[in-house]
Image (cartoon, rainbow, N blue to C red; front, side):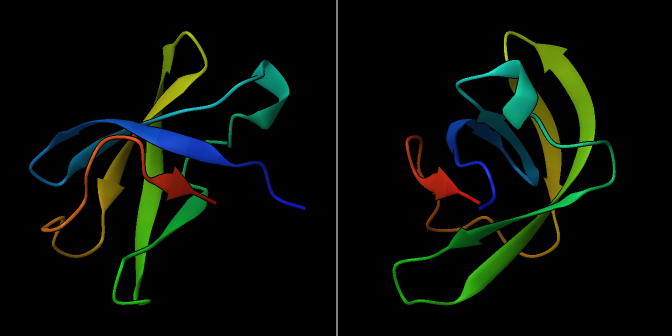
Length: 73
């Protein structure tokens, strides 16, 4: 089962995702997915480990409607 993270920051197409444990952090270039409220999927590509169990990602589509605290798989 993939690790679950939460959105901690959104700045345009850049989305920071925080995880509970070091083992849960995805590899660089790995894809993460968010299910929006309308059930559509948004893919994020992991770009950088910024420390404190957090990765910086780039959204592959609009981040409109995202908010801090949303679950990321």
